[in-house]
Image 1: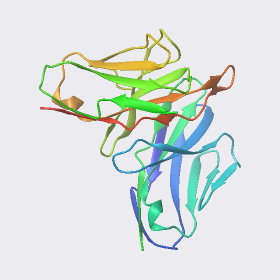
Image 2: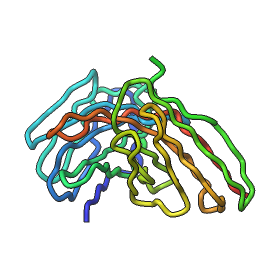
Image 3: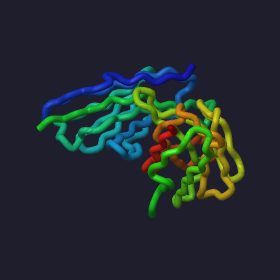
Length: 110
Length: 116
């Protein structure tokens, strides 16, 4: 069964304290892995797509990496404005469907 | 471009009432999706459409119906609302390329529905 698990559920960081969020997945043939950011009361906002193991993508303080079983979202020297819920989703080859994890709620304190 | 828009933003229904949620996108995307988001459960796919006039069931389709009469619009209907359908509903769209699948989804702002 296709499944996506994100950890931790919540993460508190001090401004400037780097860390990583984890997304582990089980899917029958990965077409793509997606990272989104969601602010309270808003829809998810697309961040990255990763297609194959070893691939990396960067955007400002965020870097996403992918292995055959998991993806990491590395946050370097975070700022309070990075506080949000980060969602991971996978798409399998067989279906036109996306499977989402339940997210990691990040709180960055000044 | 407005991207993906949803109407209404908020709605309160009584058990047994019906309503339709409207999603519109101006990006000429082929694929459209309806999700519900509940605390601790992430986004769950209700129904989706791979093109005008086509729809398919997702993970949690019971109690919902959809229609895609125009490429830019995707409607979600609740025929007889139940308290279990209290949730935040998100619409999304994505483009695709033949043989390469779909790409990232773009989400609307959501509709917060409460069924009492």
